[in-house]
Length: 107
Image (cartoon, rainbow, N blue to C red; front, side, top):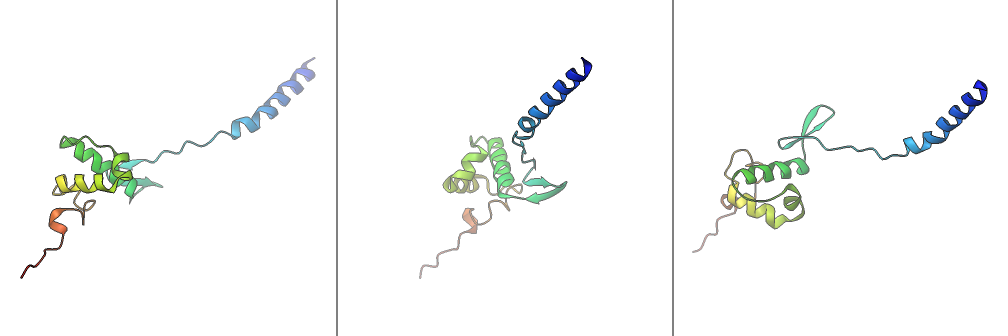
C-alpha cells in the first residue's frame, strides 16, 4: 500500500511542476532616488528619474505622479519650469528650464 501512495504522491508532484514553473516572474524596478539599482550598482534611468522628479514636485505641493511625467512631455516640462532650479532635479530638467532656453537677440 505504501508503494501505491508513493507513486501517487510522486505523480501528483510531477503533474503540478509545470503549473508552478509557468508562473510569471514579478521583477520590480528598484529605485534609489533618480537611480535604478541594477546588479547592486546605481544606474541613471529615465524611469527612476521621472519618479524622483515627481516625488520632489510633490514636496513643493505639485500633485503629479511619475507615470504622468513619463507619459506626457508637457507635464514634465511644466514641472521642470516650476522646480527646475532645485539642485536635486537640475540634471533631470536640463534643457527644460526657462534659463536653459536660448536668448533671442532682437536688433
